Structure formats: structure tokens, C-alpha cells
Image 1: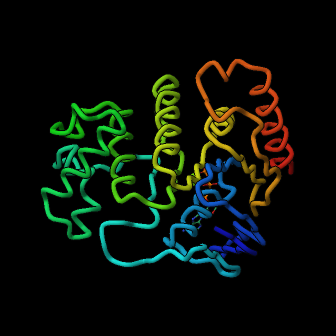
Image 2: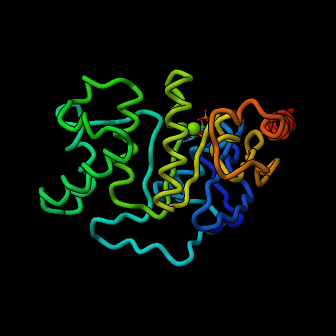
Length: 250
Ligand SMILES: Nc1ncnc2c1ncn2[C@@H]1O[C@H](COP(=O)(O)OP(=O)(O)OP(=O)(O)O)[C@@H](O)[C@H]1O
Ligand SMILES: [Mg+2]
């Protein structure tokens, strides 16, 4: 995916994005961090095709087929799980396949398999009100993955969760990424989450967002909680922190 000279200005405002260039290799896991209001969600929405740039181009190679059918090229996970309260976990996760016209037995089987992947195999007949926040986010993740997207966009998906739940979901997301092989673009405010999850971290400045640091993290492919206490991890965190400070200076 290549973003080239991307510009986005909302009416009456100063530019949010200006001359933004970014290349993302298929299958990679990229974390995007930056000060609040710098344009991260705006960038994600442009990539998802939910909004249009005022200048610049966004290209995918091979091109994304926006065909009808059960496979969606791009999936988006928001900060809130946005589940339908009157539907079971299974029918929430199966929703994108239902909208694509897949018959009930098939879509339920696919949704069930993905719910098992995220550790919710036992909760498929529950309703959202009966779930913890972490479980709801996992349903939301399963719903995004059920179409087997090529690109998964996550906008601070675990920000509202407690630290332990969040780090567990981080681990699950890494495992899913390695198993399923999609490209992941992950927005977070947490530098340690970015360093722990991603292969590459991009730090943005204040609005208009410029790339302050674009770094391949020198960390092992196998991540486990013990990594967080290592000097390598501390060094990466230090680099990200320094770039974030620099990009937030007036
Ligand atoms: N639809 C819109 N109309 C007008 N202004 C908008 C719109 N969407 C975003 N903005 C403005 O653009 C700027 C960037 O917003 P964006 O949501 O992309 O920031 P962000 O980096 O995701 O912030 P946060 O970390 O707080 O989520 C903000 O100042 C916001 O007010
Ligand atoms: Mg945002």
C-alpha cells in the first residue's frame, strides 16, 4: 500500500494531513502513534475508503477488488466494539457475511471458526450485555476477520480495557496476524503497545501530521510478556518516546 502526498483539510480548518507519504509492505504489522488530534483516525479512514483525500494518492498493489462477495479487502475495528445488542455473539460475528449474502449455515460455520480463533468458542450463544469489555472487543475482532481481509485497520481497539486484558489481547492479535497473514495497521496511544505488537512503528507529529520516526523494531519475532522487561524493549520504547516528544514540540 502506498500513500503519496496525501492531504486532508476539513472545511474551515488547518490541514490535518499534508504531504503524507507512507509505504506499507503486504503482510506487515505497522503501528501508528502520534499526539491526540494529529490525524491518525483521519488517515485510517482515508485508507479504508470512508473518506477522501483533498490531494495525493493511495494505491494498492495488487489492486483491491471491491467486488461483492463474502471476502472484503479491508476491515476496520473501532475503539468501541459496536455490537448489535439484540444479536448473539455468533450472529454479530457473522454479520458481514450475512450482508454479503452468504447462506446462514455457511456464515455461522465461518463465524464460529473465527470466534474459536479469538478464544470465544464457548460464548457463541451469549448476548453482548453478558460479555466483559475484553470479550466484546474479541467479538468485534472476529467480525472484522470473518471476511478474511487483506488489510486490517484497528483504531485504538483496546484503549478502554484494563492493562492485563489489553496485553492478553495484544498477544492474541499477534498470533492471529501470524496465522492469517493479513497486513495490519494499528493506531494506539500506547508506545509500549506499539513496540510490543508491531514490526514497524511510525510516529507522527502534531497536526499537520508529519512522520517523525519510521522504524523497524529490532525485536524478536516471537513476542512474549517477558520481552517488556528487556533492555532491547526499553531501547525501542526510548526511541519512540523521543520522536513523540519531538513531534509534539510547538
Ligand atoms: N469530519 C471532520 N470534520 C472536521 N474536522 C475533523 C473531522 N474529522 C476530524 N477532524 C479534525 O481533524 C483533526 C484530526 O482528527 P483525528 O480524529 O484524525 O485525530 P487522531 O489523531 O485520531 O486523534 P485521537 O488520538 O485523539 O484519536 C482533529 O483536530 C479533528 O477535530
Ligand atoms: Mg483517533
